Image (cartoon, rainbow, N blue to C red; front, side, top):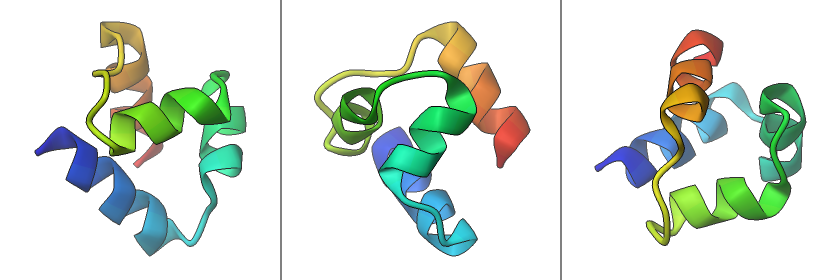
Length: 53
């Protein structure tokens, strides 16, 4: 599941949701929603996640 992968990769990097949000130019709430499987990241945000991780 994408939500689990985002959380796992973020934890491996040792960064907070706020830090990831700042790197991707989104809100902390967006990262939280992705990780809790409430919403999927947009195509652009998904690509940015891939590039970051």
